[in-house]
Image (cartoon, rainbow over all chains, first blue to last red; front, side, top):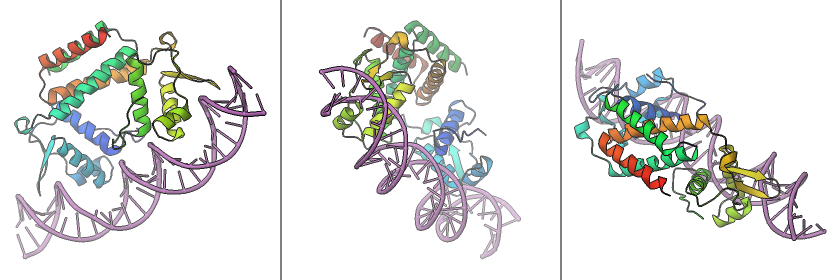
Length: 126
Length: 126
DNA sequence: TAAGTGTACTATATGATTTAGTACACTGTC
DNA sequence: GACAGTGTACTAAATCATATAGTACACTTA
């Protein structure tokens, strides 16, 4: 399903969260899709079930998943998701910080603009 | 000098690193400026000297500072900094991820473009 | 010499992370 | 009802990162 980096400074459950988020946002996992059960995914990536459960709980808190007791966990439908203003504000701050850092590392405004417009087009056609 | 959030999930030394990076990138701290000594900053923000030292060490590793034994730690001059390709690649990845996440949280391509162009102008004039 | 630097080291306490194991309530199917 | 498969909630233990406390040393400047 995805790869873990045990040497990473990121904790395992965070890596699981990020990986699943990426799969959702890339459209690989679609709304109403059923995720592997906690125990199954834990076997697949050879991690403790508690760790997977922690990741799923976090993903549910962020609105990416919902769970039906006794059935499993599923990808949230877009219409069901509430626009998270706090999350958006946080993302804006991160973006500001990121641009600042690109600048500090020697990238010119024009370069940054090109890079971003490329990224926007690339994803806009997916 | 700056504020710490002890309730944050970010560790203290990481907050110190981020704060100083921001001050440098915003131009508040300029090249050759002398930073507070490890012991002094530790008194100012009421944190253990070891914690400040850890932050300084990390900032030096990232190229923001340099230290002169017996004298203190100083802000690196731009001409002295080597363009860090690994760092830039990492920043590009982060940017891609960030845009993806903005999209997923309901922001349209046009909105994102506006937001980013605003940010680019804002910083470009500073 | 003295005070102020960075640096290194040990020791300790705390918290997050991860694993292990058990248990319970729910849903579906046989 | 029985059963297997779900999510969920615990306790317990091991490990690691973080943070504090304290000491010590080499260097620079005055």
